[in-house]
Length: 236
Figure 1 (cartoon, rainbow, N blue to C red):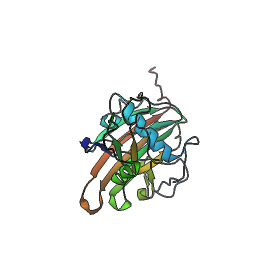
Figure 2 (figure 1 turned 90 degrees about the vertical axis):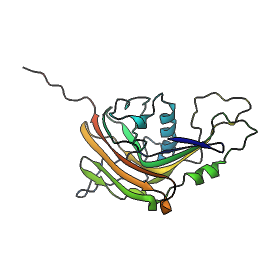
Figure 3 (figure 1 turned 90 degrees about the horizontal axis):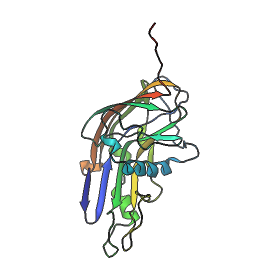
Figure 4 (figure 1 turned 45 degrees about the vertical axis):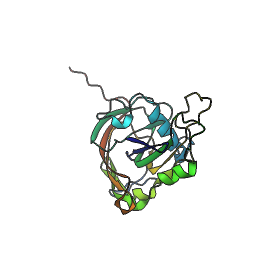
């Protein structure tokens, strides 16, 4: 998952997708690109997603069955994760009613070395952004469905982090060390609050860098989302 070279920690990750609870046409499910969650824009959410993922004792993208789904979640937006690309995941997740869901179809992340000494050479924000830049041409396959309805034109939903951000905002700063710096790029989608009950989200995506060189990942995973409490049955 992670490689260290020339003072650079580069994390490459692929994950899920999303949808909007609006009108649909046939099997298509539209998602507004400009959608925000409780006034928070998607670019800011990408940085917060990475801060959430990196703050947990267990990486959420290594979860195979959904038992980590509620870990670290709070507020009006819950984050969903995909995988590291080495396995397929089938997850169960109970979500509070009225909660947005935010996740990437495919994304990339790069950060400077943690606790790097100030006399060392570290990448600039611009260099980090260039390293992880993605393109629509790289989406070989991107099929995402919610309750059987497909979200079309995933390539239109590229979202970059707002410049660079601190991936570990909770860590104290160390004297004589650079503060960590990170950037993210990818294809993200936002799911507005879903009706109470059960919903099924499935993702099948393949990204390959232009020219077939560099970053490549295949994502196959699904979530069974229980919004609100599950029905209770009483035997008589």
